[in-house]
Amino acid sequence: MKISTTLYFDRATQQMGNVQANLSKVQEQMSTGLQIVKPSDAPDKAALVTRMESELSRQTSYQETLKAVNVRLTAQETALKNTSDVLYRIKELATQAANDTLSSADRQSVALELGALREQIMSLGNSQDSNGNYLFSGSKASTPPYAKDSAGVVYYQGDQARMKVNVGDSRRMNLNMPGSDAYVRVVRDDGKGGKTGVDFFQALDDLVTAVKSSDHTNIQRGISEVDALQQGVSDGLAQVGTDLTVVDMQNSVLDEVVLRLKATRSDVEDLDYTEAITRMNKDQLALQAAQSGFSKISQLSLFNYIK
Image 1 (cartoon, rainbow, N blue to C red):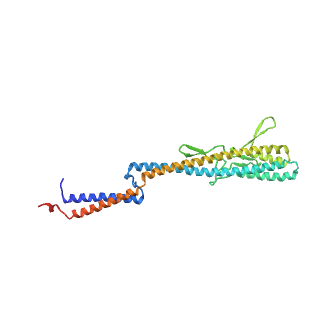
Image 2: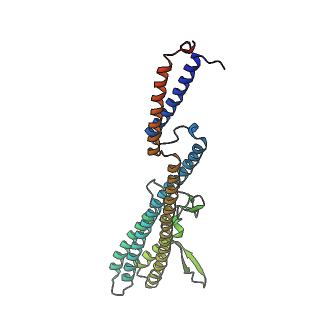
Image 3: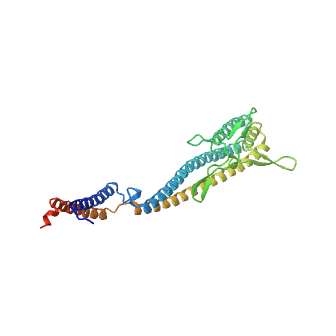
């Protein structure tokens, strides 16, 4: 290797360039608060951070899904609670109508209120969530679950499907409740020694008709059937309450997972400012020394040493 003035200049320039690059890198790290500014800084750690960010994104999507489920379940709970309150009022009126002291005109007034309450329950059965989807239509979210035919008879036009959503890597839960699971049918004697199923709203309509006609036998039957309808709504409320508990528990699990992932990512990519400041001071001193040395070397020539 030939020793020359050019070699001295090249080596000094290279040394200052290396020190300057190290100083620029630590300054960039301090400005961002990260020890991995570019993937090339630490490819293995950068890959690990990418994997953790992907995992965090997935867990966050689960949390967003849980929020949507919670809103929908809360709306279902409100609708069913209000339905239960209306049924209590219906039973109270039916019991009043069964009293022999009431006149036919009084029962007509009671029947009018019973009809209005039945309409209110139908409205509750057709409740929608914040996105305009019907709560009790099964998978037919855009279709009102309850409608009337030309004779004014209420029928269910949803389906029995229960939609499930992922709320964890190995956890799925119900998003909806078909109306037939809460607004249940009642079992009635068919008068021939057998049993027949009667729709929720048909049972209420029969009760209204019995009150209008002062049919004491069917009024008593209607009171008993209201108890069965009430039980169905209560069972639906219990299911919604259970699902809401699951939402709370799963939220706690996801919060812990997200916290752990963020802590791990922080350990990998966050900058230790104390160590970074030490490196920066060291590099600044090294750069100053290199610049000072170069300024002296640049004034010399090998001819100074040739005698």
